[in-house]
Length: 522
Picture 1: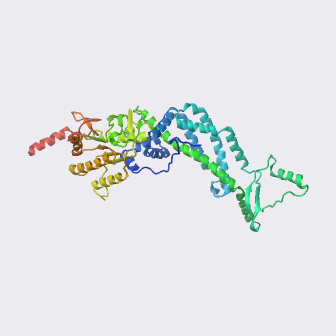
Picture 2 (picture 1 turned 135 degrees about the vertical axis):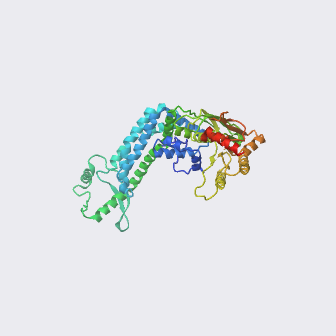
Picture 3 (picture 1 turned 180 degrees about the vertical axis):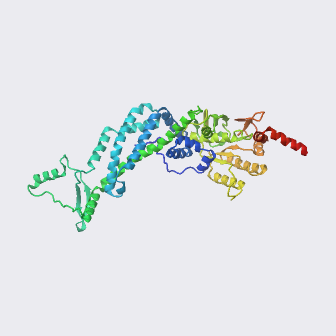
């Protein structure tokens, strides 16, 4: 049986390495609140969510496959949670199976496998009943295939066969082992034989053989090991182990296969359970969500699609437990999006929102927006400003260049790079020149760039170039200095209105006093 709820043709590998710079992306986009909401306090759900979201899909068909499965999950939440609970119970029961202390020996392997099968038998039956009851309610390809596999393979005959094997392999009437004498009359080629038919046990079977073939002659000879004969007991145990080793190994593999299925089922369902938890959190304050439309990646960034309506920072929304102001972005065919404008006007928030939406889309999730249509990218990278190194091992500008160099080593055609106030740690002229050369080289290499910047010389230079492949956005500021947190199309402005922040922090009286002092000094 195959789960295949995250990929159409393979299992999800929870141990696979994450893409390069994945931890930096999670830090810059502030994804921890998102993972926390998906986890709902469960560390396992959090880890699976982190790996799935950061390990983006690149095929729109694969994304759509997950979207359809998630839609089924949203419409059948009780069944999904019940299936997840069965998978957890199977794993927990296996942990309680006795015999693990001797699992290196055939006897221990056999005992543990029998106990595990006995524990799992009822769960397999419950799994089949759940699949039979729910299969008509699921419409997606992945779910229908999984439920058909459960109902088709876990038939009553199969479950009865498992119970029969468990009963026979307990060997309550002893073992019948065939062997040959080898060099030095040592036993070799041990084979476990099928138990005799009937219900009378080994003694009755041996008595029948004696009466039928040998008359009054003894049909077998017995050797009784003394209670304190440790060497004899050890030899008998080794003899038994050699006889059952092949059966123990085969049964162990079968048991591991069943446990592997339950483990994989739990892992893949964990992602969708996380999506259900996130959906419930967002619906508490009626936040907007939508199913995004993924578009095939284009060879040139100037041909890529990016169209969003009402997109917002889902991580910030989860922290504030309220719906945020959404923004509209029409960037189809734009290889470079430059976002400028007033301080604390929502520029960085919009950049994070677009990055989060891209990752959530390529994970097969719903996104925090009213609508989203975007080209898939080969990899998403971020270069956000960081705090000063407390150990003073290098300057802030050197640190920025070092991180950019590491990112460039990973970039390739079709990637998306988000820059947030990069190279602002040096003077404007030098920072603008360095940023202009880097961005230009990235665009020529087929990398799409979204850039929040206060470097007016940089933004104004791209504006003068008259390139139709650049979209300019500017944070809105009202005439009284208020921020609406909307980011609208607009040419770059030479000021970020830092005086607005001064008035808000120190108040109008402080500003008037400062102005009066300046006049008196003059």
